[in-house]
Length: 221
Image (cartoon, rainbow, N blue to C red):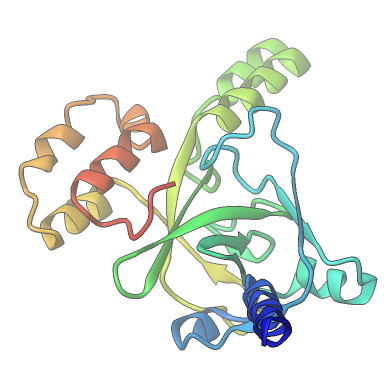
């Protein structure tokens, strides 16, 4: 009897372990909860700071199967490790800007969207181009470091287009006002606009606490 119970317990643990890692090929699969299981997943972070939601597309995900790892790198939309979500940045686009390869931590926001933190890209990216022009290569390096340091928030709320690109939205003033109003926490509008400088106001370390106060994040980073 004890052997039977122990065997059943081991089987139960095996089921839990096998269900720990899952993935969805597309945003639509994610919405419909069409997950596929992974037996093995290795998560490597290149961040020296090992920060939870700070560091952009810092994670490399592999399984040990080279053929599947290539698919994991290029095509899979999202991977789950328990309650932790990792979104593939390769095909994400904002104003034609891109993040490059790698996965980023993400959380659910609202009923159909995902929020993640990464560097500011696109046409309205953090404006340090003058520094690069004035100080050459050294200035360009300083500008790049400053851009990486100043992380902002993005929202995914739609699937890929015909070219396989997923358009994302920057959490800007307009989107913050909409989300705060939708949560019926109008008092947080003044908290958000307490930072007068537009670029500083949109930084993740200012935006995230306000979204948490509004109860909009399904999980905390």
